[in-house]
Image (cartoon, rainbow, N blue to C red; front, side, top):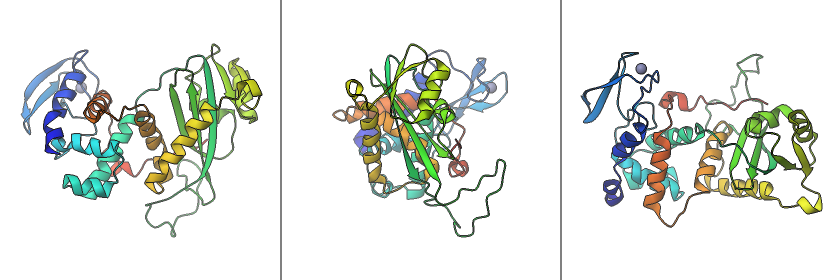
Length: 302
Ligand SMILES: [Zn+2]
């Protein structure tokens, strides 16, 4: 364990990646930044625009982290699919600490922008029961109110839409579903497709009306010559992979979808390379979540 933590200098990777195109302020994105002493043995910077100070870990999953040196091993455990309890034992940190580490990692991955699709795009969907796992006082839930304070009711469904193109670029989105229509499709993939793509999907009218609006050529995937099913396979692989977590709270579905996107492209033969790649990826994303806001995530309603 010590070996991997020593071999990978996470602070160095963050510092290098965050300053590739010139260091910017993580608070206001200002470019006028000066070195400003050290804080907890880390270089500190000050932004001349907003006057705030920051380090290389500010607004990252490692912000305020007491054990950044344990992150390479934590990422290794996560890549290997170890449970939080197992990982906590190996790393000698508490389960609750790792719970926050995992969710901040997943939020960073969720904030990575999807790449636009090229060529043929296959789309598939599924509906899962809404799960309140881990949520306190479920029995004493207040009745649903209108407006922004939405209370989830039992029996409601989470809709997952997943799309994959011919170069295996993927995108997915989970929403609390109150009726499947073209707006759901648009929210999931609307900004990733254009009229140069061809869409392949099952028979739901929501897809065809989405395509007609966008002037996108489409086919029904049940037509024999187009029966290639990559979209459905990709979605099924995700659902099978999710079984290891023994049920998650639905509000975290988008986080796990992002994690699956990363992990399904990873070469497992070289873990050190995988960890380094993961650190590089998260170093370029700015997140503002803190421990207390992790549980407050919600699914968008479609
Ligand atoms: Zn600033």
